[in-house]
View 1 (cartoon, rainbow, N blue to C red):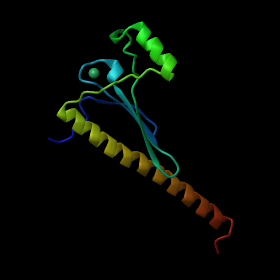
View 2: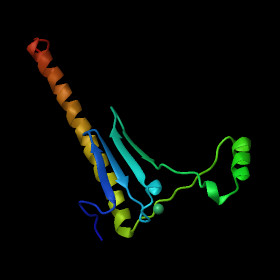
View 3: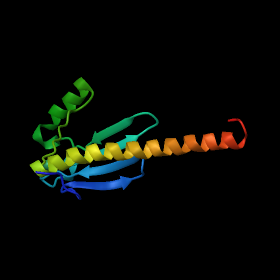
View 4: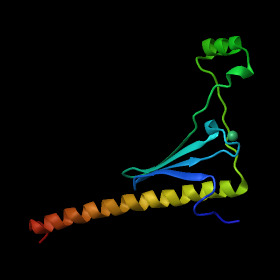
Amino acid sequence: MNPQIPAEGIMKTNDWGNSRVYRVACNCHDENHNHNVWIEADESDIVVTIYTTGKTNWWSKTRWYHIWTLLAKGYIDTESSVHLSRQQALNYAETLKSAIDDVESFRNDRQNKAERAKVTKLAEQGDCE
Ligand SMILES: [Zn+2]
């Protein structure tokens, strides 16, 4: 089984060259399980952020349970899981890999261009003789 392009279950929602955003959809079609995946190249590193917009499973326990938990712990735990088919999981992995490569080479190209521009400018000024 090979990763697909375009990839089933993976949607590219934004692309700014040095950063990309994908939405990985859960097989149960509940939007609250989706993964929002940000792959960004900063000056020297690659940062991958994956988040979900979870809802408190408020009705699974009594209100008093939640209020008591909130008072005692200061927060309420929520759990969210994303369910992927084999194909989707493979696509997810491949998307991460290729997006990391893409944003990294975009960043490197830009840095190289900036570097060349600097060298050219210095040469024009006669500082490089
Ligand atoms: Zn789900």
